[in-house]
Length: 453
Length: 140
Image (cartoon, rainbow over all chains, first blue to last red):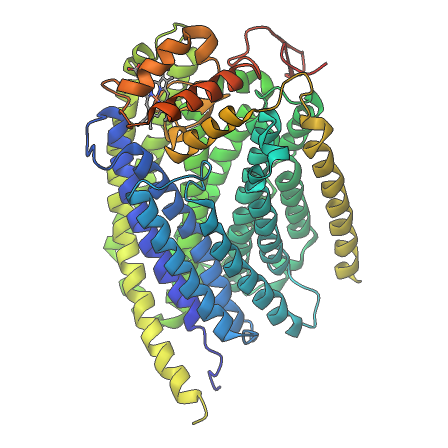
């Protein structure tokens, strides 16, 4: 078969994403220590390390998901990209904007909102990259004549919701929204709900895609169960966000609605992967040892995080957990335990597919070591945050400093386990980066050869 | 079987519901008509709050970074002068970010504006048997 359809763009995104995670964790670790020792690296204030950490790790999630789509469509699904040039521009514009944003943070130029702390004009090129991506995605999938498997729906939904969240996250620029504090804060958090919903759609779509491919059972992604999960996820994405703002005095119906919706978030997704796992043969599990390992880890973290999410979505309990590190535990548990594990599965799935001879190197002791280090330290990290949150929620006095002293031991455990986790992930990323690089260079050559002179 | 069509119908219905819901959230759901809108000085203060990324360390209504205390009601609980002193000079744990005099005025005015929008943590609330919470600040 002629490999005329290039998938180099996808590989490039993946490598950029791995760099973003490696750097993002580094800033996270610095920030963790600044929490305890405010003088630690005082030049690089927490006002800088926090957005650097957040923006870089969020980029990791999007970049790997996007890279996967740009890779899988041409390489495995037989759909050459509608425009490879658009994909390349996407990469270039994103990279340049990302570097400018990093420079802004380092030099103390903010001006945006939490999570988008950079000056708002820089949102314009980012928006542009999503237009390039969205058009490319939907035009490319026009080649599909069969009804779409669920992961195509999920990816498409993730893209559409990114636009919605991006527009909503900038509504504060309009006085109608900005001048009423309650509206401003509610719309801001509505947009964040759609933001995490958007990346979850991209990531869960990726998980289902890989699970389907490994098992070789196309029915998995067309089953009623898979579609029920998709619609339930979408329902939560649209209406569940207000569990972040129970405490804000908006109209109570917004809250009660979010409460009901959040309770529907049940175990369907976990169930799919669980069923899938029992359907695999030993051969499949071994052949895809790394991808399999990461998917199973994601599955376990889903259960843990869903449990916590259900608890803190009950308004009466949220009253005590809100504004504490329990919220951070929830955020870190799901972005690291679920999203990052799925995305690593995607990376190592690509490696197994493209470099079957390297697979034993891929299953090496080092990756296993990284895997266990990262997961065990994540568990410690997660528990430390919950304990710190309980300490803060239960504190009845009026002195912030006193409260911080009480929870300090937990924050210390949190910061130290963060270092261990970073080291674990760095080891994994190093191999991922290296091996994807090998694929990228051979892919570039193959593509150049296939191109008519 | 044509799952594609059924799925499209469900998607369409969810989409319509989302648009209607969003319209309510943008308007009556968050109208807070009992509150005065921001004036120019407060608006400038909101921008100062963003320009110095105070939210990295502080929260309103518990939303934001946790390195420093929640600021929703700092003005009514501690007073204008107290807040000004922290912002002007910093402390061992809060850095002095070097705000200009007019920036300090504006950001303190903004904190006073936020203070009037509600109480956090809620002091008077009622927990219903099914876990819902009604607060004193809820619009009537």
